[in-house]
Length: 505
Image 1 (tube, helix red, strand yellow):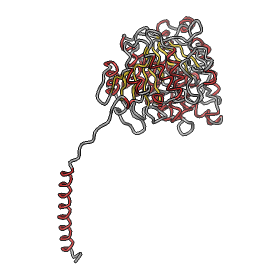
Image 2 (image 1 turned 90 degrees about the vertical axis):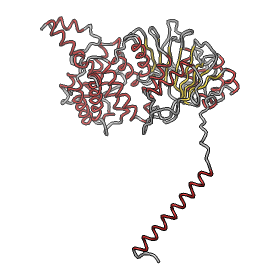
Image 3 (image 1 turned 30 degrees about the vertical axis):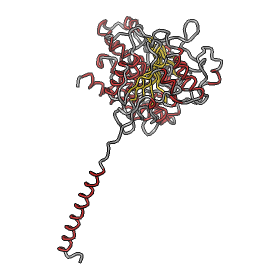
Image 4 (image 1 turned 180 degrees about the horizontal axis):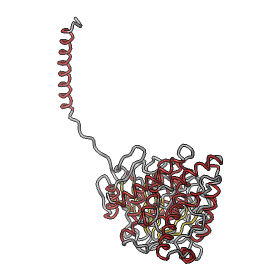
């Protein structure tokens, strides 16, 4: 194990232990925002202090010069608003109010990058209990993050990814303990990895997730480019998220992974899309990926009929199921020649009738659907149901649809199943080769799909039926007789032992 992985494990463990302050007192779905925000503030403070010390070492005791140089930092930290100033006053009353003021000052000093990021979180909230309990909790968390193992300065940590990975580690653990709310902010990393490999991000791509959660899926796409092009940052990430606190997590997640070339908007994608072009129309992207909320009941049907962006011209999704609302929005935002898209959906999207059936038929007839990939059950946080990934492309060269049934190949877990590296590699290879594999994949023609009334239910195309071994009844009968003879022999032996001991007749 190399030093980087040891360092990563140490930091992961330290930040997860910092959550002990809240456990048993505050629900994880609430305290995750406080812990993740504190990690971000601690990182900003350690980087700022580290750079300040470097300038002092280089230029000596020249406060005015150093102060001027520090104005050019990636993030500016106003006086008395950093972590250590808060830590110094932790024993005094008013921790909540002081932290909120510090966050506001940091936001104001970095308004271009951090506008509204801390707007939806308050450390002075009664969610943390009465004033005495709140002050005590916040004192403890300040002390937890002041431990030596959570010194996040570049001179100690080195690569920025270590901090970003620790942040992702926290989000993943919070998702595992947050029940149904987990799906609001996190897609399992293995699913994100699979989707990112399927859409093949390239240098120069503009990539969008219109239901971005904490931005883990966008970051997986970015990593594909960085891995393939020696750390290239020649790409742009876009996203929109409806929940304010989750949008803030996404922004912090981006910065902690060293990605400043992003544009994440806060708002409801269906009712009020904010990623627009210079003419006020929907902006188009090379890649569109998402794990939208499954079958969202109140998705905004009331305004869909008069949608100014004509997203629902193929039909209006049912008012209590918003799956196709997100799909149609994503379809509209793909670039005409390079656009490719992957979206997670519940299986009902594949076969439900009425308006969904009509929309599905039109998308297939337009030759936009490229693949249907069935996933195992219990992969997603907050729900045990199996899901599927639909792949759409604007650059298809045939009119076939590839079906992959990957539902039976996974790494089993007690509460959560996972896709292994081999599972992911097999799906990606099958997708790229675009071939039929026994009991795993099938390339269906447009005619076959038409014959099935545009029903995309995977078992209609991929036959996974396993014939049971033929039973030799004569052999079973002979084995039964042998067993009966053995039992009779044992009974006789037992009767003999009992007689010797004076029992029985």
